Every structure is written in C-alpha cells, then in structure tokens.
Length: 241
Ligand SMILES: CCCCCCCC/C=C\CCCCCCCC(=O)SCCNC(=O)CCNC(=O)[C@H](O)C(C)(C)COP(=O)(O)OP(=O)(O)OC[C@H]1O[C@@H](n2cnc3c(N)ncnc32)[C@H](O)[C@@H]1OP(=O)(O)O
Image 1 (cartoon, rainbow, N blue to C red):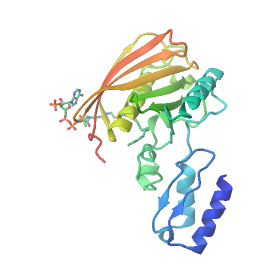
Image 2: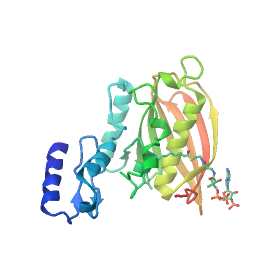
Image 3: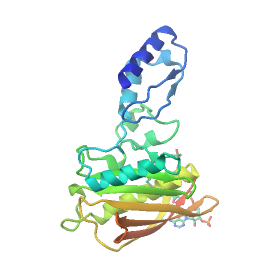
Image 4: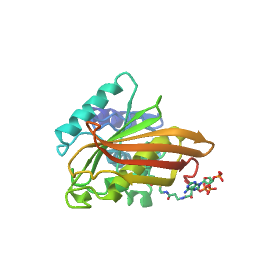
C-alpha cells in the first residue's frame, strides 16, 4: 500500500539520492510509474505533496447509485482482457497529460478541470470513462447530481454539453494525442433526470489529417431512451501548450 511504498521511497532517498525513484501505486489508483530525475534538488515534502494531489476521482464513492455501481463493475470486468481501459480522472487538467502529471507550477495549482469543480461527492458531475482502443470509442458513465439542475428535476443542457464535450474530447485526445474541440452540435431528445445514470457513448468516425470527426449518443442504461445525440469535430495539434 501507499504507506509501505513511501517508507521504501524514503529509504531509497536517504541511501541513493541520485537514483531514479519509482513512485508507489496507491489504492487510489494514481499512475503506477512516476520517474523523478535529480531527486536531490527537490524536497521530499514537495514530492509528497505533488503525489498526494493525484487523487483519482473516477472511482466509486458513497454517492454512486446501485445502477452506477453495476455499470462500473460491468466495464471493469470488460477491462480484464484488455478490450476496454479505465481512464483515471484527476481534478486538474494537466495531470491527464503525460509528462505534465504532478507538475507543481503555481498558476496550474489554482486551476481545476471544470467537471471537478464541486468538492462534495454526488452533487455535481459523477462520472467514469472507459476507452476501447480497437473501436476508438470512449464511454462515460454519468450520474448528474442535484447542483446540475436546469429544468426542475432535470440536468441543465450545459451540463449535458460539458459531459459530451469531455467524453468526445478525451476520445479525440487519446486517439490523436492532442486535441481541441472546434465544433460540437447537440440534439437534446429527452431530459435527463437528476440522480439517474446515463451512458455517454462516443467514437471517432473519421480522421482527415488534423481533423478528428466524432459522434456521440447519450442513452439510459437500458438503452431505451435516447437523451441526446451529438456530432463534433476536434482539431488535433490545435492544443497550444
Ligand atoms: C494524450 C493522451 C491523454 C489521455 C487523457 C485522457 C483523459 C483526458 C481527460 C480529461 C482531459 C480533459 C478533456 C476535456 C476536453 C474539453 C474539450 C474542450 O473544452 S476544448 C475547449 C473549447 N474549444 C476551444 O476553445 C477551441 C477554440 N478554437 C480554437 O482554438 C481554434 O479555432 C482551433 C484550434 C480549434 C482551430 O484553429 P487552427 O488555427 O488550429 O485551425 P484552422 O486553420 O482555423 O482550421 C483548420 C481546419 O479546420 C476547420 N475548422 C476550424 N474550426 C472549425 C469549426 N469550428 N468547425 C468546422 N471546421 C472547422 C477549418 O475550416 C480548416 O479546414 P481546412 O483545412 O480549410 O479544410
């Protein structure tokens, strides 16, 4: 576990300051490998605080309904043979970008991924994404909380747009490496009850040089209700960093 790993890291730090350090894999599911070069130039405290920030929010919490838990377990099961991959979710956007994870830049510390802006569990966006590489498909299990209200009892259209944008955007990101949403068109077909669980199902339809064309459907778990459908275009390498 984390405790034992940290003790080990501390011992290694004391013994051989120049050696590369392998970060422990926590129960929270932080990335299993973080290599820190020149460890002697940063304090152990700094390293520890960076590491602790990488909490994975795409893991079950007490606000998840039975329906959300069942669907999550089903996808986890489908991850076992490698068909699907679970996508971890952190509260800062940069932590999703390989090579930037755990960066401690001051201005970055003040920002948060929009969907992770609410601290209390269950009131905002509860979601977990899974990616299917062979189908170039990103699925998001989404449970909208009470603070996402639009019409009484139902999710705000902007919150639906946000979860669609993030799912489609993540799909394009994983497939193209870098991506920025250029265009997103949504048809709202049926209101999404707050507290219900829906499946946001997106896939890459076509790639033309820098342009990534995607489509997306938001459906109830039983598939019977189509809540929204969308098409979008992401531009690869339009992500200026
Ligand atoms: C690596 C692995 C990582 C794995 C991690 C997975 C987990 C990740 C989890 C969490 C991450 C967070 C995920 C959240 C995602 C959120 C997404 C967003 O919210 S994005 C913010 C909103 N979008 C903007 O703010 C864009 C603003 N617009 C722009 O910056 C530019 O317009 C941009 C970059 C989109 C395009 O600008 P140009 O200069 O690069 O390209 P030009 O020359 O204008 O156009 C190139 C071609 O594209 C067409 N095009 C451009 N814009 C278009 C549009 N809006 N609609 C249709 N076509 C368009 C043009 O007609 C042109 O086509 P012709 O080459 O002539 O055929």
